[in-house]
Length: 295
Image 1 (cartoon, one colour):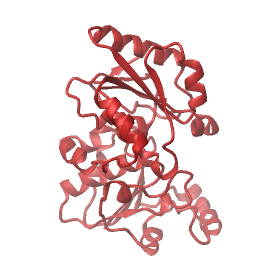
Image 2 (tube, one colour; image 1 turned 180 degrees about the vertical axis):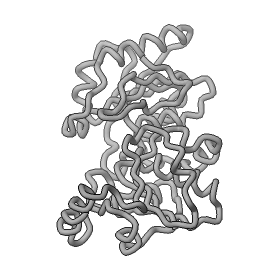
Image 3 (spheres, helix red, strand yellow; image 1 turned 180 degrees about the horizontal axis):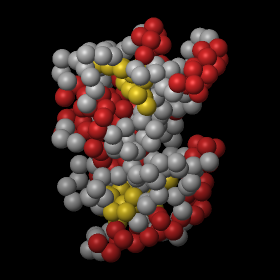
Image 4 (spheres, rainbow, N blue to C red; image 1 turned 30 degrees about the vertical axis):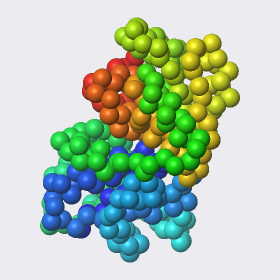
């Protein structure tokens, strides 16, 4: 049995489920389960993949999790006691042989796909690297089909985005500021806007900003013509920002898995994607595909 962790916000969960999909593709007869207990008590919106995309996968039990893992859900019963004992054991022996941890969530490690399949493992990571689902990209895009937008406000945004040479701009501040994550500077966004303007000079561009800091965006970029800040998609509707960004003709994204998927799911064949040359704090690689523009 293989158990794969699912945790963090929507962008992280999408990387983790893409890894799960690749594992099932390579080992169709293997018993592979998801640990969604790491989404409980999270400061995001819980487990979102089923309610947004309707994905189905067998979930592990708490007993199966504890048997293979030394990374226990914070929201679980007796967490502090269990965590204390595991910390002592980890300091002496390291992780359990059955618990394989991706230390840098952006680095591709081939070892995850070359396990002894006669044994059971718990795989913990975000797997935020395109190589983890290389070769099944069409399958991943088919899995991540958003539901139809039905509310009037977002239908208006959708119509405006689809009918223009739209550029989706993702700015992330809120939780990053609280966590001490290095923020993408203003100069990146201005340079990225200029880069796209130079390459699409024969059409009028419209800019749609998606952010958790609308006051900052409105004040900082008020000088840019045809720029609007999209507001209102919060809580369980936060995913609609990703959906709308994916409809834009081009994308400028933050150092965020949420931003990554908005650009990755953009189906415009001539899209320009610009990403900051700034990895998430503590990580080695960018959330980016090879063909995207780095600056």
